[in-house]
Image 1 (cartoon, rainbow, N blue to C red):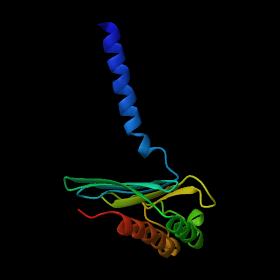
Image 2 (cartoon, one colour; image 1 turned 180 degrees about the horizontal axis):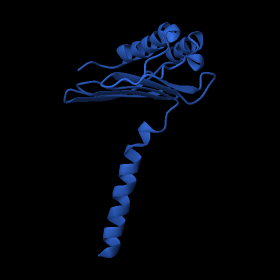
Image 3 (spheres, rainbow, N blue to C red; image 1 turned 120 degrees about the vertical axis):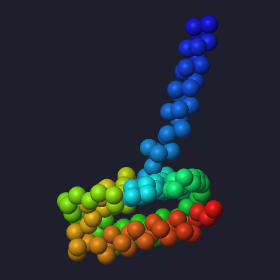
Image 4 (tube, helix red, strand yellow; image 1 turned 30 degrees about the vertical axis):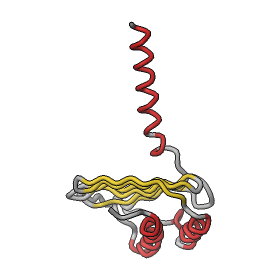
Length: 145
C-alpha cells in the first residue's frame, strides 16, 4: 500500500512540475500584469512556438500558436532599432499600475526590462515601439473570444 501511495505521489509531483514548464522554458517573454482590477497577460516564445495566456475580470484564455520566422525577424529588428538593451527604467515607485515586463534570453538583444516604475522620458518612444511590436504579434495570432 505504501508503494502505491509513493508512486501516486511521484506521478502527481511530476505532472504538476511539467505543467509549469511552459512558463519557464522560453527565449522571449512578454507579460503584463497588475492594475486596480488585476489582469495577467503572457506571451512566451520558444523557437517558432508561442504560448499566449490572459486572465482578466474572471475570464481566462490560453492559446498556443506558431510564429513565423518573418515575425521573429521583425520583432528582433524592432528590439535592435529601439535599443532595447539601452532603455533606462525610472526608479520611482508606482502602485496599482499595469506593468509590462520583457525578457529576452538569447540573441543580441538579450536582457530584461520592466516599466513597473515607468521609463526615463527620453526612452518612452523606444519602449512604446517595442510594446507595439509585441501587441501586433498578439493581435495577428490570437483568436479573440
